Image 1: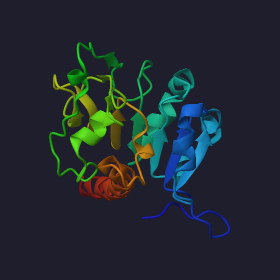
Image 2: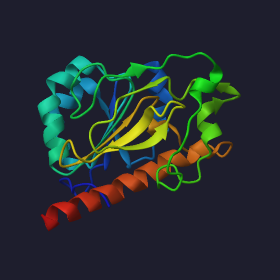
Image 3: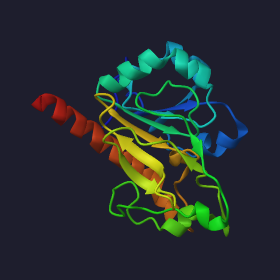
Image 4: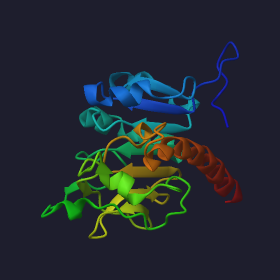
Length: 221
């Protein structure tokens, strides 16, 4: 699936990375396929025509006060049958159905262990939990807390107490929301040294397929 046709025959990118401009997001900004994703400064969001795109990818370091002011446009984007991925720690109520981030009490490095309840889910298929838990032998980089599940949401990754690291919410809007309580999931791509490198490409494919499913559900109503 491709984005909307622009004047001159050029197609809009399917994905918009709403970028907070932080140094730590540089590798994500520079590591995306050309033409596949548009990098948008968060302060340009109010003027952006979101209808041209399939998925908003919201950076962990965005200005959440601005996102709160744009919350009605974000809901309208989702209600038009689109997808939004937020990675990070939510502290303002701009995302439909989502609650604020809850830090995990850590007593040992085992508290950072990641579990994949449904290993065959297309986003994480073939990904080994230890490749998420550990980065160069050190745990704690992937997730240090969670966002409570909205009603009917599906947990994709969990911490040892069952806290959802990553979930999918298809009930709070007429679109699909993915919430991940760590770094940008689009940043996990291209690495051949870790199975986590599968995530970025699989996530992009899944989003495109999800938009088709949303349209089919809507047409059946």
